[in-house]
Amino acid sequence: MRLFYFLFILSILSCKDENKKSTIHNSDFADLQAKLDSLYGAHFNENSPGVALLVLYDNKKVVNKGYGLRNHETKEPITPSTNLRSGSMAKQFTCLGLLKLMEEGKLSLTDTIYQYYPYPIFKNVTIEQFISHTSGIEDADWIIENSTKNSSEFVRNEDLIEWYANNNVIRFPPGTAFEYNNGTYATLAQIIEMVSGMKYEDYIKKHVFDKAGMSRTQFIDDADSSKIPEYAYRYERDSLGQWQSVEGHPMDEVSGAGGIYLSLDDYANYIENHRNKNIVKSESHELIFKPISMNIELHSEDLRILKGKESSYAMGWEITDSMALSAGLWFGTQSFVIYERKRPLTIVMLANNNDFFENRIVDKTYSIVNDYFSTAANNVSYEK
Image 1 (cartoon, rainbow, N blue to C red):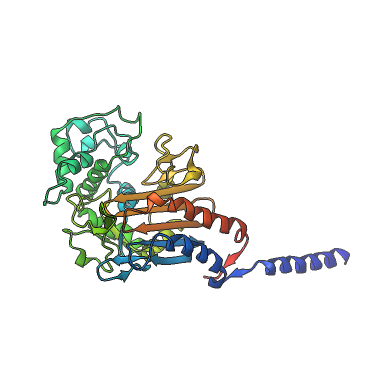
Image 2 (image 1 turned 30 degrees about the horizontal axis):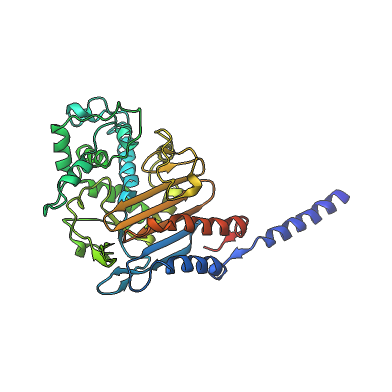
């Protein structure tokens, strides 16, 4: 009888402890929102291009807000549904496309590029080395970009393949070093087309975007921004400090490494489906964050907590023991994603200007958000 009474009392106490576990409502994030408003408001306002900021915790949109303008001329603001160019964030989607083809038995990550394009430069290089920026071959994207700065014609992926067909420039033996390479990702996009029998854009839309709930995400098509809903124009400061549009760069349409416009709302859907392993099979999902390159410190200048930490490159992400990072940098656009792997926290920043990284906003944003969740929200549940 005493044992029954003891267990009964213990169960009541346990229930009381459970009841103490509070449910956070949106109003409880006012302090966090105020600190972020202060940070972003100091740099972006109703008269400047700006940034879209998303903070997700346990798939709840804790912060989902735009600062500044998507169109400097018409003064239309950035909102969570604004489509901004995401830069190299596109690489993670290209890798998911490759994983889907691997699941279908249509390619292997150990295949040589030479199997698809029998050019000398590709002879001893694998798909995996293209993914991890360890191929050692010259970056055709960089070479062509520097030779077409004043051109009025757009460069296509096929132009990069043609350069590789006619040039055999090896910078280091495959797999021995890390060197960021956009040209290899453009080549991977072409391999996706060759193997799937579909346009790269169509394949990624069907097998990645549609599965991830990214219904408004778009590829740039013939540089026609009218086809992209809530398009954010891109800006850079001129020598006088005035904002100038930088639309229509000759390299804008090269796909695989970049060229995707997405919104915070769509990317939030993607992260939820990504964390729930709904896009690729579980075995494939395990490869996304499996390091396949050496220590790189790719983004340590933007996020100081990475200084001195070991990091590697995986499927479009820089990987540490606790987080995955993805960043984009293009003319008039900068982006950064912090995806924590040991707690359900994701921070997304999409900017339509070139001032974002210079002001250490990535580092400051993470510091504010991390401090909040480290002290206030470790042991709380969320209303969804």
